[in-house]
Image: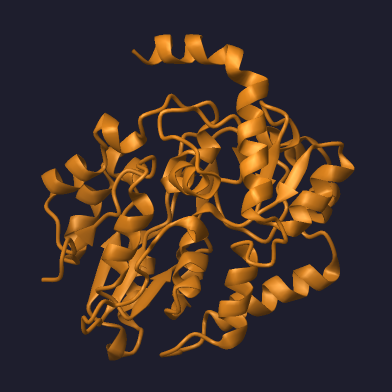
Amino acid sequence: MKDFCDLSDSQLEILARSPRRDLGYSPWAAWEAERSGFGLGFRRAAHYPSWLPLFITSDHYVDPLIQMRDNEVNPEFGVYLSWNAQKVDALRKRGVNAHHCRHPWNYLDLDTSHSGRTPSGTLVFWPHSHSKHRDDTDPEDFVSSLMDLPRHYRPFVLCLMSYDIGLGLHKKLRKFGLPLTTVGDVNSQRYPYRFFRLMRNFWFAASPNMGSQVYYTLWSGRPYRLVGRNAYQHKILSCTDTWNHESKSVAFNLRYTDNELKELVTDFEASLEFDLEQPLDMQVAFAKKNMGLESEMTRGTLTHIVWDQLQKNRKLMPNMYSRRS
């Protein structure tokens, strides 16, 4: 079996909990700019020490839609970084000091190739949960949809998020007899390296829903397949998003800034339901756009923002380190 592609329950549970050193050497000022290796990327870009807090708020996912979450409308330290240009425009209209930058993974020395291996099969990203959102996907329906795919998609390996492993999802899925794996703790600064170390074993990736992994996969030049979309369900446990407090029509308009974006996203998602052995140029271009590759921000500008934020918030640091110890 491929590296880390068939893990036991105990192995999954261990990998879902990062040792403290994997979270980084600095206390976290804003979790959005730290988790999933974002902190590592921002520090590499800005020549910023690993032991200093990042006093910036940023996106924590990749998505072309505009959700206007409270932490985006009211960034804790007065600066918001986003790789979504439309979101930046929307935030600026609300008076937020928002900047369009590249996704921080762009600044890491990631090996997104297959590294001389012969990849095969499909890494299947199971929809994830978090404290305010619970996945309620019908497992029988979704696995049945996987089995209906052409044989060149096999073998299938189910990839679970660390939060869902904590909820015991891995034990519930054992009955299907499919190998289980994980990228590990989403809070780890090593997350992007582990993501592509796992991905290089597979030719395809798939899921029943959209998520950041779709853009990461296409960004690396691999095909992605949406499958079993009718099986995907979720529950909102609580919500503090700004748009959710307004009318549904306003919420819709905020999610799609214009009809052109709506049509583009609709066409993009529809293209992911095709049987493709290589990603379309349009898919890769859309993924790169949403990873911020069209940003005009230089590393010098990003460096200035990060260090200027340290200067403005340096008085907060002593209490942050004392709380961490």
